Length: 202
Image (cartoon, rainbow, N blue to C red; front, side, top):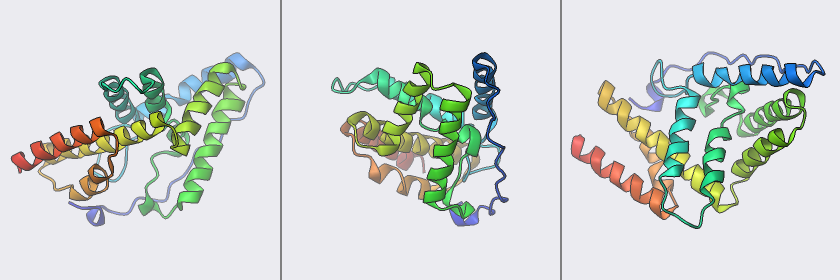
């Protein structure tokens, strides 16, 4: 199976942005409930009933903990992995096949984060920490952000291999768009290990 064989997705309908009640406790609890969407919303582009957004971020967080790179702030990497797709609780996992431009996707995700940080969490220190981590990942300039981006790519490749094994699929395009782009030496080595394992099993 390749991406061209997957049926086009239905037009995405976004839930309305949250309107603050002015009560910090009520709004914070509403945010906690919004997080549930990450547990139930599926990642898109591969198979029906794919893994959830939370599944993806959780494995990334554990991968970050497995690094031996002492130059990285591992705690920051773990937190960044957990929040990097947080906006998808509002907008879902948007793929290029949906006809939404990269600029519109960025605008939608930034709007979701503003809603979470300011309308739901009232600009609290915790909210600003979440926002800073998300922005750092999006900007992709720091060593930690680059490392977590590599984990994002590696996690997709790991999942693709697991789907290939479980469902007798050929998901080569997902490997082509991930493994060759790994830059962190350790993550690149993990990717090479995966590629070798996949080659032996085919």
